[in-house]
Each structure stands twice: as C-alpha cells, then as structure tokens.
Image 1 (tube, rainbow, N blue to C red):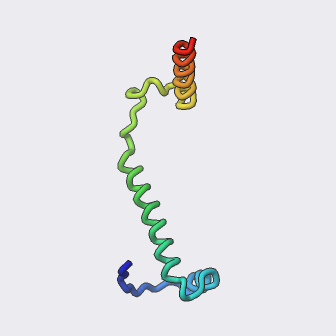
Image 2 (spheres, rainbow, N blue to C red):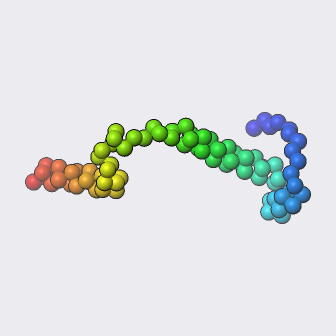
Image 3 (tube, helix red, strand yellow):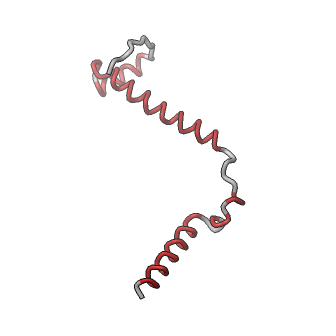
Length: 87
C-alpha cells in the first residue's frame, strides 16, 4: 500500500501508551488501524442519523407484538407447512 506521510501531534502520554503496547515502530500501523475503526463507527452513526424516521410502525403491522413473536409465528407456519407436506 502506498501511504501518505502526514505529520500529526498527539499528547505525549498517548504516544507513550501506544509505544508501550506496540513499540515506536508499530505506532503508525496502530494509528492507521484505530483511525479506520473510528471511520467505520462514524459512518455507521451518520447512516443511523440519516435513517431516523424511515421505519414506521404502521408500515409493519406484523411486528406489533415484537420481532421475536413474528419470527416464532413464521417458524410455526413453516413447521405446519412442512408437516402438511410430509403427512
């Protein structure tokens, strides 16, 4: 992977903590991995914020008793259909 050299300033205690776990030569890889995880988390939060209000209970009356009950009812239907087919 071709990287881009970037100068960042982090607090000394943070640098010392990272170095104590991964060593000075592992610092960049550690920070890249941490930044990638944080980007995923922030993108997920942004997607959740964007989706607010998209789910409407009236559009899904089958879930009024809760999703666990809906799954159970679907399984019962499958079991009933399977029993009927296999007599």
